[in-house]
Length: 325
Image 1 (cartoon, rainbow, N blue to C red):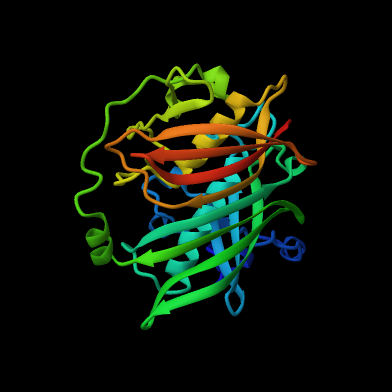
Image 2 (cartoon, rainbow, N blue to C red):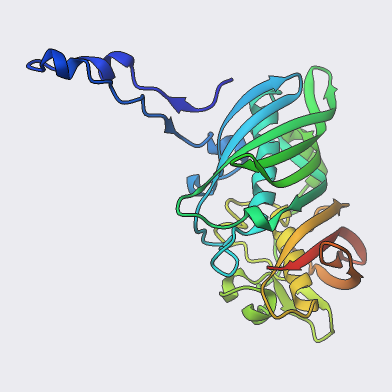
């Protein structure tokens, strides 16, 4: 399917109004205006139109697609780092949205089916994250592999995405996921998600690279490099709509904030690589404990392993590489 654009009819652009001279009639008409919209918010599992980053899609070949996206110059949560660079987690959210859009629009997964994310990886080049005079226009190439079906229904896959800006590679990333029908999801989840623990106090925002306490997702525990996940279901971005478990982007933000908290730095830190695996749903009715361990530096930056545990079980693990801006 072609991208979501609208071309005004040619006769509305080239028809000569009454009274124009032949010379005026020979003046070339302006090129048709391309009007861009976002994709349907339901296709990317968002309630707020403002949180939809994708603007269109096309097909390149078997299991290969093109997607377009736009990053705003400012965002209420993914705020520009140091006021100059797009937040790398905007790239993560963009890749996440791609993994909902294409299964729904191209593989026929019905709206209402749940997606269980298994793994996530991302690489970002800070050189192409600079905020410009207009929003960043992005072209994304997506390739699906290990495509699975159950009967005739798409049931899961892995996809790899390359995000380009003016031809330069801004980020690459991949997700693996499984699709679950509403009936199967209800059997899987039972009564989970109907209760939640009281909201806990945030760490000082400046200690985790944030400006507002509202955006802090870690709470102090009194133990070095160990925190409690702060789950604020009123947050308009992390909890764009009601869910029965901690969203993946909340866990990604927790990993970023934990890494900033343990890596000494003089200038702003940004995540340039992320490798995550998700073992279980992080529930809302029990504390989730976040710990961080520095693994040393490589050519790209300081590596930190962040682990989330709940009721004595490992729920997710992320190795994030942080670099100074």
